[in-house]
Amino acid sequence: MASASSPAPALTDSGMTRRQVLEALSGLLLGMFVSMLASTVVSTSLPVIIHDLGGDQTAFTWVVTATLLTTAISTPVWGKLADLINRKLLFQLAIGVFVIATAAAGFAPNAEWLIAMRAVQGVGAGGLAALSQVIMADIISPRERGRYMGLFGAVMALATIGGPLVGGVITDGFGWRWNFYVALPFAVAALIIVQRTLHLKPLTARKVSIDYLGIVLLSAAVSLLLIWVTLAGDSFDWWSLTTLLMVGGAILAAIAFIVVELRSREPLVPLSMFRSRTFTLAVLASIATGIAMFGASVFLSQYMQLARGATPTEAGLMTIPMIAGLLVASVGVGQLITRFGHWKPYLIAGSISLIAGSALLTTIHYDTNFALVSLYMFLLGAGIGMTMQNLVLVVQNTTEPTKIGVASSGVTFFRSLGGSVGVAVMGAALASSVTDLLGGRKDDITAALGALGDQASSWASQLQSGSLPQVSAMPEGLRVIFEDVYAQGISQSFFILVPFAIVSLIAIAFLPNVPLTRMTNRERLEASEADLATVSVAEGMDTLTATADFSTDADGSRRGETARAASSPGSPR
Image (tube, rainbow, N blue to C red; front, side, top):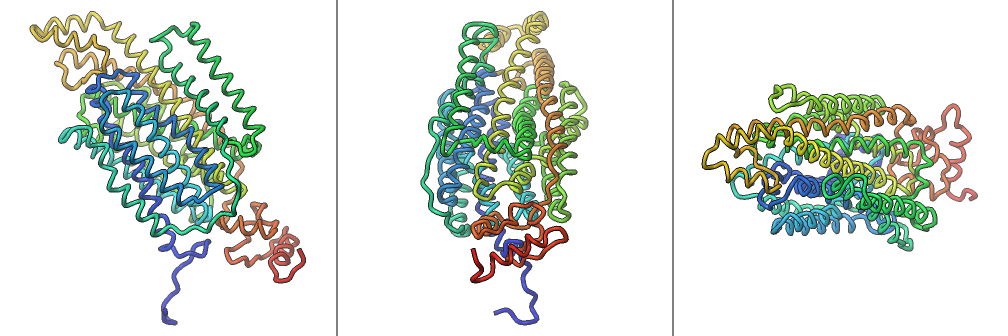
């Protein structure tokens, strides 16, 4: 028993001490770290992996896109399940799926196997992304959540910084297959910690109903669209019967999905959510964030290796400025939001930084001063850090407690969907640009090959194979040509991000500036079950405390009286 002179530990809005909150979050943070590490550890080694497996630029793009696509499709499924059954069990299941698929990817004999395992990996990643946000809302109020959102940003930054560096060292020293096994001990630790530290109140029993038809239709619509974007202009013409069938099929599947969602008792993506101005605008803003986050991590690593001749380890070091921007912005802004309660100025600043970073990255060349490239990457990372987690926070703040799972996963879903479509489009643009630019440099390539003597035939056959080249191993004459071509192609692909970043700024500017409540989602749910009408009014929430000690305000005295009457023992119902 604590002595009378000992100060009582400070309580959060949920009535838990900060130590208790951190213990409860430790497993979630480690689970997110596992997810991020397993994804980022291969980012710097992907050019080497695809080269060794005999894949081309399309395979390179699909290794990333497959994960993003299944993450996007599975995220609302996990979110729906989170509103129906045990969230802790779901989180542990997501870790298991993710790790098994990651380990299986290490045995890939070809690019097709790797793409398939990365797709399964995305199913688990979707669960980790959605469930961590939902569980966080259960134990931390939106006002306090800013501080802990910063921790999630810090963990993501650590995994994003450490992953490429560790992956580069492993690839250079032990071979790229070991990249897929490094997350296993962390996964086991995450499962144990979640079991020991995360204690959630059971949900009210409900009949589980999963929208399977919606899942199939959504998967068909998105997959057809991405496959068309990837293959059009290469395997078939942009204007062709194949294009008509694929695009037409995607449109029909999308229309059928909307019809099914409107009629489903438990829709995969409740379209009624779009009646909320906050949710709709947050979704629009999240799309640009997804494209920036995933597109930059993929194509900047490729730029470092194919346009600047870096090794995988060097590429990891060279992308640190972007991660530093994400880390500083995420942690710093999270602390400021919790301290002052204002969120909108930071989101606007983040979207402006996103526009600046993406626009400046369209100007890079193979010989651009690296200090400038670092500045551009820092601005892009800062924009991602200020917007990504806080857009989820804003939506959770205004969503009904019973729909917190689908709302949180909805924003994450569209962010992942935007990222998958964006990476596919940027990859297709890069492949097309590289093909056209190499065609324009045909005479230069012929002259460079002619100067190689006996090695000319060997390099000519490698270039004609269509597989992704290992630029750093090329002779000087060829290397300069390919570095210039890939630098131009990658910089042009960033033009795709700019208009989405501008739309993100407009959407954030029109977001309703609703104050952050100090009630956790669990408290809001319990209060609503007790018929406390005040919890549906955002302004009224600021007068509530976790102990249900309600006070009135100048314009809400009647609401306060109603709250006290409803919470008084024996009061009429």
